Each structure stands twice: as C-alpha cells, then as structure tokens.
Length: 210
Image 1 (cartoon, rainbow, N blue to C red):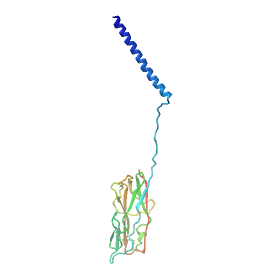
Image 2 (image 1 turned 90 degrees about the vertical axis):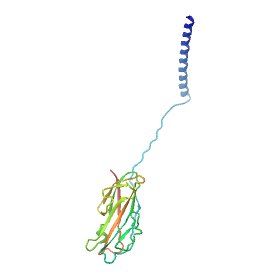
Image 3 (image 1 turned 30 degrees about the vertical axis):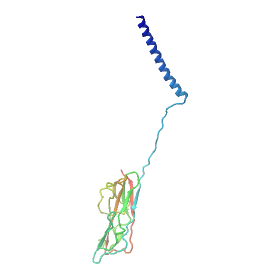
Image 4 (image 1 turned 180 degrees about the vertical axis):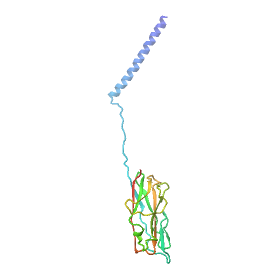
C-alpha cells in the first residue's frame, strides 16, 4: 500500500509540473513575439467606380447622292435597311452609301434613347400640295436585346420638337447587347419645292434609364 500511495503521489507531481511547463512555454512564446516585434494587423482594399452615360454613332452619315423620280411617278421612296445597301423605289438614286445609322452604348449604365430631327417632311421637301412626302425613322436592334421600347421596329414620323421622340426606354450597356440601328425613310414628291442638295441633322440623346 505504501508503494502504491507513493506512485500515485509521484504521478500527481509529474502531471502538475507538466502543466506548469506547458503554461510557461506558451508564456515564453508570447514574450518572444513581443520581444521580436511580431504582431498581426489588417489591411483593406477599396475603390469607387463612377457611373456615366455615353453613346457613340459608329455609323453617322447617310448619303443617297444625286437622282430623280422616274418619269410618270408621283413620288420616289428611299429607305435604309440596317447594314445592307439602301433601297430605292420609283427613282434612280444610289443606295450604296445609304446604310442605317448605328448607335452603341459606350457607357456603363442602361439608358433611354430619344431622337430629334432638325426638319420634318415638309421642311425637307416643301411639296406644293403638302402631300406625297415622308421623312421617317425606324429604330431596331442590331444586337438582339439591346433596346426595349414601344416604337421599336416601326416607321415613325420624325419629330423636330425639343426632346424629340423616345425610342428606347432601356438601352443596354453590356457588350454584345449594346448596339441599335436607326433606319431612315424618305418619300420624295414629284412637286418638291426644295431642289438641289437637301440635308438634315438628327440629334440622338441618351439619359440614364429609370
């Protein structure tokens, strides 16, 4: 019994000193970290991306050149069809340099698109009867899903009033879905009062959607 008691006491003493030794090791480690300048801190990375609205007319000119209405016709109609050669009906103008305007959203926000002309059909042609003359626009997607609007894909009379006509309520900025066509249709009356070269400027305005 004495021997067993002695061994038990000895075991307790060994465990006690082992615990003290482990505790001292941790304390020494913390002390060494302090003495050697070891510490932990945190850094942060931060930036702000500014939003902006920007559009670009990558095709910004339509030219039909010289021509006239075929004999016996009351008018001639000329219109663009996207990237294709322009169509001429009942006249002899050339459609080689007449493809649609192309507008790209180059900003980083969806936006709305409105178009204002400088003239209406009568300003452009000044027919004696104020008929048989047309000046129209048709906005469509060059890349599917680029523009959402109620007038999309339809011929609409130009609008020279301030602000023009809104064609896109939501014009996407993401690559692959950020380009639209603006096709132009002109019906030239046989009794046009404005002769020689005629031209107009259209204004395409983008505003942040929402």
